[in-house]
View 1 (cartoon, rainbow, N blue to C red):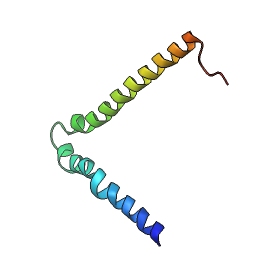
View 2 (view 1 turned 90 degrees about the vertical axis):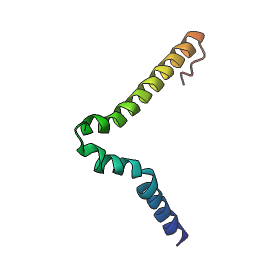
View 3 (view 1 turned 135 degrees about the vertical axis):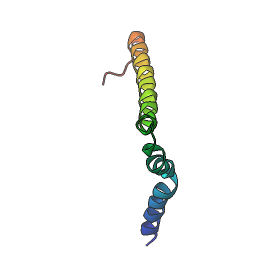
View 4 (view 1 turned 60 degrees about the horizontal axis):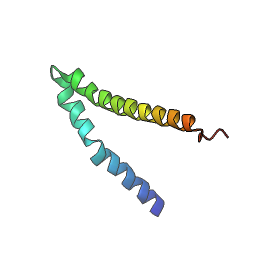
Amino acid sequence: MIAGNIFEWIGSLFTDFLFAPFNWLRLTIAKSDAGWWTSNAVNWFFLLILLVLFAYWMKEAARFKKEGTEDRA
């Protein structure tokens, strides 16, 4: 019974609180003239973060390989 309540609470957390900005974006902003650009700005923001983290990861991998401390197991 407790596990059911925990999963209901997690579902409520996501649908009522964490996704509320996306619902607002979908229902109000996306219907305006610049709606497509505004809606996709979220995606471009996440893509930019992903590219920065990937570049950092590649830089660190090259550094470890250059130092000879890369784990090749």
